Length: 173
Image (tube, rainbow, N blue to C red; front, side):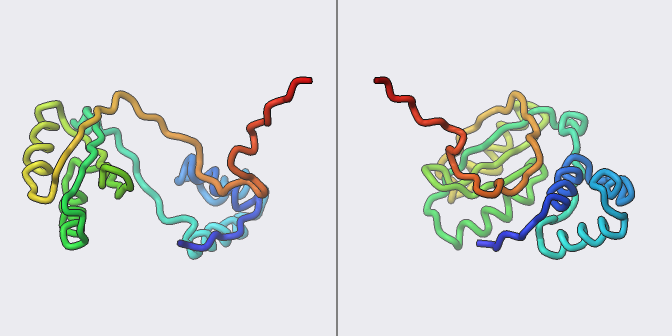
């Protein structure tokens, strides 16, 4: 497991702003967080070198690209062995419909997010690219009606613990 990186309030503010808009200029970023542009550049460079910032992504609207139907595929691979998993993962990642791929615990081995043109295209994808594979034992499909982006990812607050906001029951006398 990777080591955590120590981040101060300025680092966290920079990360929050960049996650909301990665195209923010260093000058605007520096003004927002209250440091000199050169200091801001140094901090972002350090965050990249330490692996906190992994890169920048361009987000596209699948519907505007003709892929207006998104689904989650729960895939069970049998037998679940490394020599089958490697080629399966490579193939799924190479499919133009694949948006994300997760290796899971539990009864399903993989969760695949896909974007397709319509239900016929989804059926083709499931039948031709998944269930036709010898190692795929089962595929369950869930349509995505709507998705939301969530807030920026930040480290847990110092001293935070799971369930800390849950108050114990008050005992009656």
